[in-house]
Length: 68
Image (cartoon, rainbow, N blue to C red; front, top):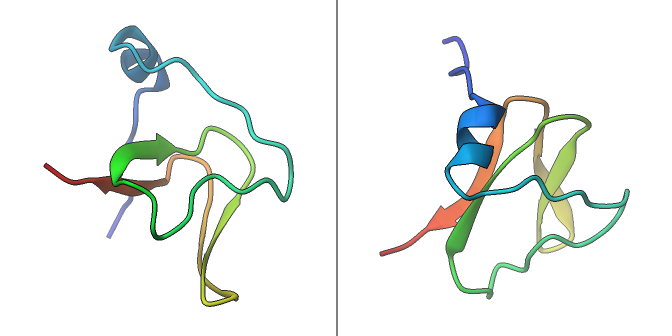
């Protein structure tokens, strides 16, 4: 199955300005409030659970939670 195409410009225009993170920087913890979703523009993000990488998200991929 082909990954969906994400328009980074559309997201920026919707009030979500780009945020940069340094290599190795923590973006959020599992216990944090689920109120954000992230799209990877460049590089890779490792998703870890209990100290183990369970997924690596690359450009165009997304991660996070949006809980009502």
